[in-house]
Image 1: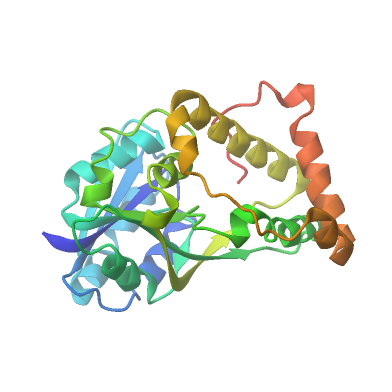
Image 2: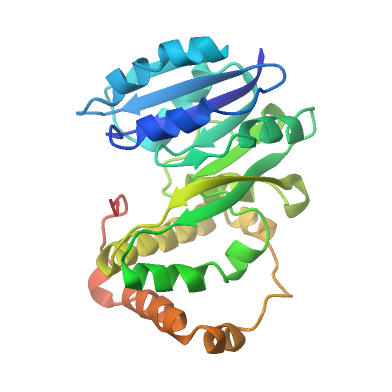
Length: 277
């Protein structure tokens, strides 16, 4: 058994996967070894061929590379299939549009070593393009309790086998990262200092659609697994909203505009699987 398995579910990710794998295979050495499992699911583009094209780079690094080609789409099914193939003592779940910094994999493997259930992630570096509203929205979002405290885990999260044993197959839910995070109490969630680049969705309409999907996903976890909500972070030292609003009123207005639009009745039947990009 190797120290770390990196699971990358990928549905039509040909445009993003090369940068993701380039960054991952530039990682610092992982004591005990590492492997990459790309789980292509329902792809109609070159995702599988692109992933297979990294076989030599992985071999040169000394990492194993598996590419699973699933006919059926769906991220949760992909995670279940990837875990069945994985050999790692710790499991790192990586979105295909994320780029990790070199120290991240080794730091996560280190903090998850052992038999005590544990969860980990790095520090997200939220990247934003040139859209002015998106940049303003992001500035305020980065000041919210979810981002300032705790271990957010979006785009990158990991757990050891002892932690993963807390549930069976992944349930059919939207927010896999929320479900995973809340299966651990705050003291079991570890933030390593290494960072990763996570791209913010661009444009007002896309922000509204994806942020609404996130809200629906969290509500779904709360409805189906209510006991998990007790594991959420309690933020009692967050700077008041009014202070943050006064410091950056443009960002506050952009953030509120997105949040208000999310709750308009016309969006209540939004597709639960919508993707901003």
